[in-house]
Length: 256
Image (cartoon, rainbow, N blue to C red; front, side, top):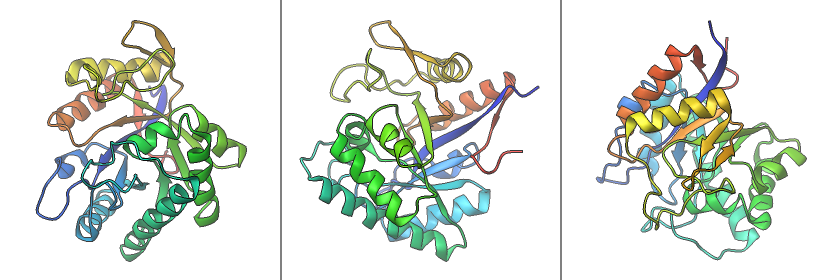
């Protein structure tokens, strides 16, 4: 018996030129949605094209994964941009991925800011408003994937659909933000532990912070990072745990 349906998402298309990142082919057999890098932190026209083509072939929903213009730092460094710069950077990246998707007869259905931009839109109102402004003017039917915070609130206030993500392979602070990657223990690697966290997020709506506090996470999407060596094993454990517990995996709009 199915208790509920969850969207299982990973960041994909994060290779660049001859440099390969992650096992996208294996992950696409497990996921329901993909956040596809749009060229600013990773990805290039060929990588984007191949990634979208594989998503279409396997029935995986395509989402944009815009980032700070930080190719060297993989989008994980803070950049002091203006709201105008954030908005135009997001429009540029979203437009590129929409064109690639259109070539393959598909659509971009969601947007999930990457890396440091994804962290800051939860706490910086100007960045959150910039992302919402970009989505509103380019395609207001897009669903924004985000943690609870400024971006989710601004999107809802503007009538844009929101998917709250539980980020299972990252440690949380007591306030629901992520532990910075520069700190020890910020990234989790044990597939069993991560799969247990995913189940708890879905079935109980909570995650345990690194200080041991129970933090509410009312998520309808579970996100894992595709660039880690254990990403495929983690995704397999999560999917198996969901199936055992009657949790269906599907992207919104593709649910029975």
